[in-house]
Length: 199
Image (cartoon, rainbow, N blue to C red; front, side, top):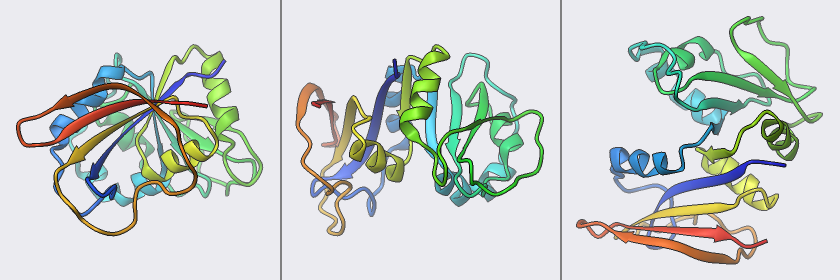
């Protein structure tokens, strides 16, 4: 059985996921409500922050924190130790495909290989579920789109900001039927909408 998969995204009124300021403290405070066992992200998200990760204070792993799992098809992430030591996660898990390039041996980073040319997300979720993982929170727009396309997402939360940005919407692949699960409004006009994804 696979884990419950959730995702949260900050968007504008016109459905764009960039081009406006987001209160990150509020965003991640709301995300903690799921108490995820695993935070799932991708190499692009990590590589984009590589310099900041290397320069950040190293507080050590947080034993009660979630596991950080990174989809890294092309073995681009080289900051595994720094990520592990940031103080947010209990550890890190590198997710590779069979054809991912060779990478330096790292005895402290767990690896999981699933898929041939690209990481097989359904298989990854099944393996995590077998290992006792109950909740996975996606923290990557690219992965969220992929998981929605593969019907792997159970719940989506949108932090809607009162601004029109213009540009590409965060999701435009196919129709999704959503069931409301809750709404909250904040003083600055931002609203938080939670939905269950109908399959």
